[in-house]
Length: 335
Ligand SMILES: NC(=O)c1ccc[n+]([C@@H]2O[C@H](COP(=O)([O-])OP(=O)(O)OC[C@H]3O[C@@H](n4cnc5c(N)ncnc54)[C@H](OP(=O)(O)O)[C@@H]3O)[C@@H](O)[C@H]2O)c1
Image (cartoon, rainbow, N blue to C red; front, side, top):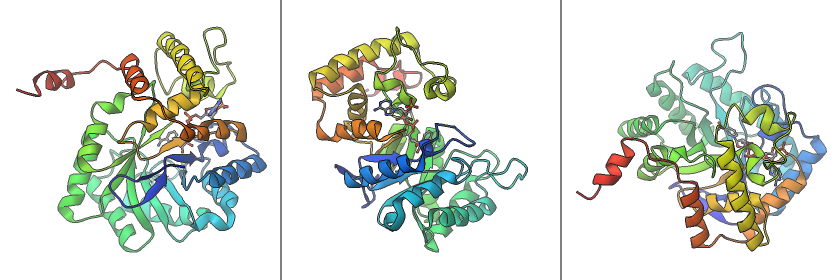
């Protein structure tokens, strides 16, 4: 296993992080239920291969994902790095059981700690920006959690570039604990974060944690023009309206990925993951699996690397058009 620093911190995380969203299917983003015996197999195999980093969230099945992760880790629950999140709706009928308010953050951390069977969270992430709470209130509450020992590091997820910059500059000005990581959607089919988020994170020292690195299963090569995602597949059910991309271009990309995979005697999933691994700003890639076979396939990406030429080729063929002001700034950068 390869280990990288989480952003600019001294914490070493495996370059592959196992996401626990797929463990269960109740509630938000029903990614597909796994039997507990399968979850146990997957967690044991990941640990055996050196994975020391696990990601979950309070809202994944209203806490069930956190509980199942802790159950599968058993006695090792304190020996690994656990990331969880706060922000989403935990109770439709309670306007305060959601958001990034001090009230909800303090309530939510205790519930997550209980479900995870831990005294502290290694990486506590704000799941996405909250327009209804001043960011000053959120970062003060998070700083207090670090000071009282309930949290080791804090991170963001799904923020815009300016939201990251504003938050971290305020944390710096106030002498608070700063966000160390940014969990964002990033894949060969979704490179939007390269415009604003990646430059902000590089400048401010946050490590990127890509989520849905296989675009919810599309970048595994199991779908093609002849064999599109069946209506009951996870991709068709939940990703199609969510992770938007041009299908024709995506199938062209899969054709190219198959050729590259063949050259390395590897799989399409491994090529897609290794393209992310080649990015120095990525601290760890959060994968999701539904069974042990998928995990074995994906984890084998760490056994080989793409050549510099192949990374550049994939950069080129998936290059998104630069919006304004990026193209203007590129054009006049040296003047
Ligand atoms: N912060 C956020 O907003 C956010 C959002 C989403 C996810 N996340 C995090 O990111 C983690 C990973 O997300 P994800 O599950 O969407 O990741 P993903 O890797 O893009 O998709 C995983 C899905 O792809 C399929 N798959 C994976 N490996 C495969 C293989 N080798 N061969 C064939 N099919 C394979 C499986 O679905 P099927 O077998 O059902 O097709 C699996 O459930 C989550 O667990 C969560 O921790 C965070």
